[in-house]
Image (cartoon, rainbow, N blue to C red; front, side, top):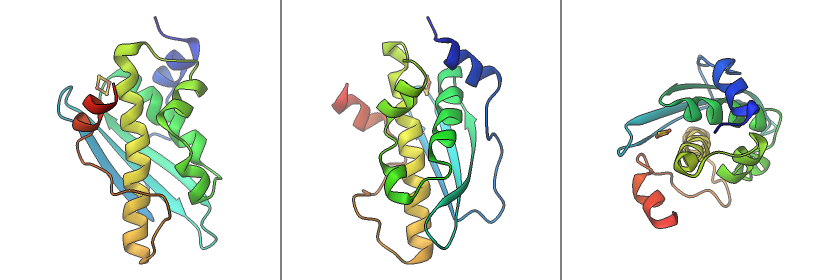
Length: 144
Ligand code: FES
């Protein structure tokens, strides 16, 4: 049912934990399944994501997608990080079962929420970034 990569990132999650004084912190949840994901980003003065960590209270796929999402955004610019969509995370994990697609949406939205927080703190506008939803359930219903 799950790819080897999903199992690996679930059993050995990368970048689990939190960043003290993070540049941006984003928390999103899905009211339907009750899962919650928090993403921490450390962004340097050149707009490069130096560090990414996460805390996820959720299912195995949510842990695996959080882990992969942090790996994918590390070292990237903010604009590049915006391209780390839930599909990109799923592809990097060699796919997810259809009922678990929403878990990857949580990862995408958590990145956006952390970037939004960073932009607010830094007083900047990130082009192409929409205000994230605290609960992704509504959006998910529209998309899938
Ligand atoms: Fe909801 Fe995985 S079951 S995030």
